[in-house]
Length: 123
Image (tube, rainbow, N blue to C red):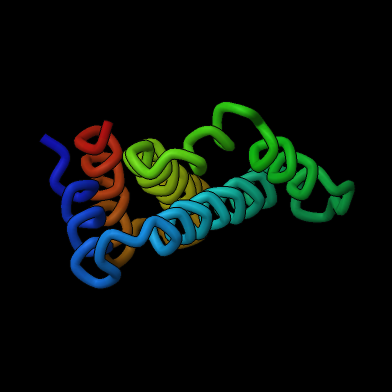
């Protein structure tokens, strides 16, 4: 039972019919979002004053890895892309809360929990 994946696939078919191109483009957009989240996560976890290109290298490595490229090429692998985005979002929120950047104020811990729950439900 994967409600988010099923809903996104049904919404895509409802909006664009049986055309595969928009579904592939959404998968590519999700992959780009995951790559951007990797870059932001590495930038936050690395030292503040360093500019050695580690976030860019990590994002490029993540983007070009065959496991992730395969997930983009198949429409049915949207669960992997969504799980990656939610897991990386969870790690970003968790890094902010644990790093004291946002101090646990507001709904960030609940947002982190929601991201983790969606990540676990999707695969």
